Length: 581
Image (cartoon, rainbow, N blue to C red; front, top):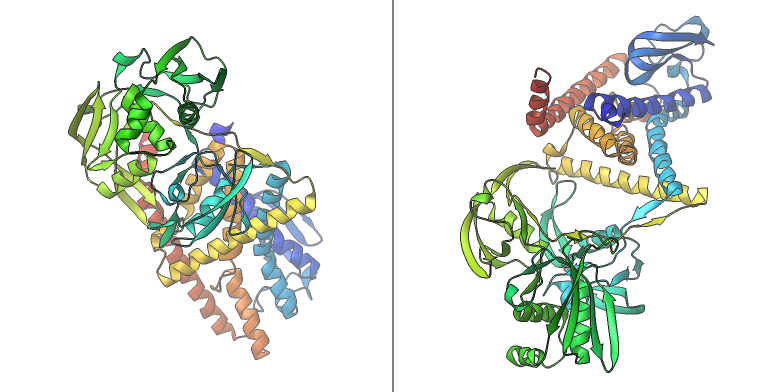
């Protein structure tokens, strides 16, 4: 069923049908309430399939299911009005009634979006908790003393409920000192961090300075890569499941599901003066936070002896080791590394140079320590080749690796990008999201209103950016884009479809109020002019106003369709050819 509905044509019919029907129904209800006659209320366009007449109004279902329309009696003084609706003409209604009827269509779209968000709130909103998965070394977050698993509570006194809240606040605060309150081991602490300033394109296509703390959501899995296998029997690809160590006649055990837990346990045993640690592994690659069905468990004893003190002396470390130093200690003395950049699968054209189990260390001259480094370095390189230094069977190799060219669609248009076509043995694992339910209809409606207003403001900002030139016109989308995303959203599930429905409904609410002739906003301008002049414009002026509106709308349709074809021409052509295979 979902496969059928996910076809772009079906997706756009379903989505536009709902959106336009709701819009026109808003006009219909308002007209009825104001005593203005409605000649036709149609679901769909074209010849009718089914119809009936009640109190002078023709209600019909038409053959083209792309929304619908409402025909008001006497929308213009030159129109012929059925005798049933004499005295109920739109042009004879008071100014406030006409304004109300015009406004009701867009407002119905506003209410639809609010209702969708309210429904989500009643059903439960999933949030990613604002818990730090990894902190980039020497990043603003690291310098502020933040650690993996710290839960952010507030920034500058504002509650941070989700990872999205955290990202938004930090992104909007480049170079600003932020007072961050967080929870660590059930203790409430605070620090000050200053996000780095990065010039990036935001979600509406503007090039703006954004803040970056150097934090990642999600944890590195405890899958290991072994560079010196002669020291123990742990093999590349094994997953650490548990560690145990003895200190002062006490035995400590800790289940491991993420790499930082392994580092923390090792940090504790070094501080406690333990001379050995038992590491339990399974050959199964645990790519999720799952301690069930571990398979065959093997025990490995790692001897510490004097290695810890020698390491501290060599590195001139006077205090206990931090997590980065613990990671370095483990790598130097046992050849154990996380597998975040260990290749599990390599595809063309990079397979000419790279092999499975190669552990990437550098891209160009930059050492890769986390996903930030990998992504940013590839973006900055933006060439078909890049020098990669990797460890292969204990040896360092440096070679020029060919990258795969891809076309990336951004708000500003298409960009050629070069990616490294590999998948890695270690992955980032994510904690389960928490769900917040609004059992009270009023609190749920408040959430729905807040989301609708915030998204309305975002769209207004984007439109203002297009006018000012800060947002590229390539970001404007049309019917092909709507068809594509509508089909994709149904394929992803009804949750995604409804979210997209709400967002496009908000677009209709905002765009229809723009003072462009033909649109509701343009008609509201005419009502306002009539109120100021105390008489309507001449029929010729009205006609010229409508012609101007038609030209503007057609220009917008041509531009948006051009942008859509530019975005999706390749996929449209392949699908068209597919019909004849």
